[in-house]
Length: 320
Image (tube, rainbow, N blue to C red; front, side, top):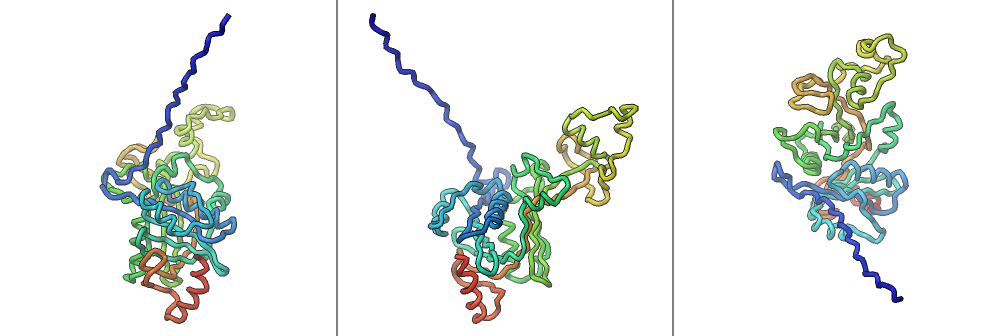
C-alpha cells in the first residue's frame, strides 16, 4: 500500500518588533540627545568597568552594548552616529600618567578633555552602603542634571555648562511626571582647586512621619511577623529598630502635586532623599578644542604654548 505524502507544514513565526526610541521629545519638541560611550587605547579592568558605569548612567539614550574593536577610530563611530541620531561622544582613555575623559559634541565639536584624578565604581559605592538601592525602573528615564559653582563668567566654564546641560534631554517642569525623576547627576566646581566633583544619585521620596516598617508593609504587601507583639496596634505605634525611621529634618520637605507610588500621595508632605549609586569621579578640565578632538585650542590648563605643546604631546597624544 502506497504511503501518503505528508504536506510540508509552514511554521509562521511572529517577528519580534523592537520599540524604537523617539528622536524628538513629544512635549518640548526638541531633539533628544543620544550618546556613545567608548574607549581609545587599552584600558585596565577598572577603567573598563568605569566605561560600563558611564554607559549605564547615560541610559536610556545610549548604546549599552556598543561593540568596539581596536582598529576602530573616531571616524568609524562618527559614520554610525549620524544615521542613529547620536549627538555626543564620551571617550575614556589612559596614558602613563592618568586616565582621561573626553566629552565631545558630534559631528563638529567642541571637545572637552578632563583629567580623572580619582574615581569610584558603582559597585564600590554600593558595597559601602548598608542598604544599596537599585529599583528595576531606575534607569528607565534620563537623569536630571544640576551644575554648581560654574557661574564664574569664564569662557571654558560656560562651555562646560552648555555641554553638560545639552547631554541629557531637557524637561518641562509643567508637564514632567514625578515618576520620571528617578536619578540626578550633580557636578560641583571648586574654583580654588579647579576640580569638578561628579556624583550620581537616585531620588526617593518618603512620607513624613511614617516609619520604615510601615512603609515597607504598604509598598510590598508582605505579611509582617506579629509573633512578638501583643496586639496589631503595636505594629503601628511601636517605634522602629533604632535607625529604622530616618529623621525627616535631614532632607528637604516638599508637598507633592500628584500621587507617586503607594505611599506618597498628593497634597501630603514627603521628604526628598538622595542615595549615591555611582560612579563617582573627580575631574579637572585641561583642554577645550573647537572641533571633534581637533581644531583650535580654546582653553588649555597648561598655560603658555611651549608648556602646552610639551604636556599635550606627552599625555593627550597618547590618549589617541
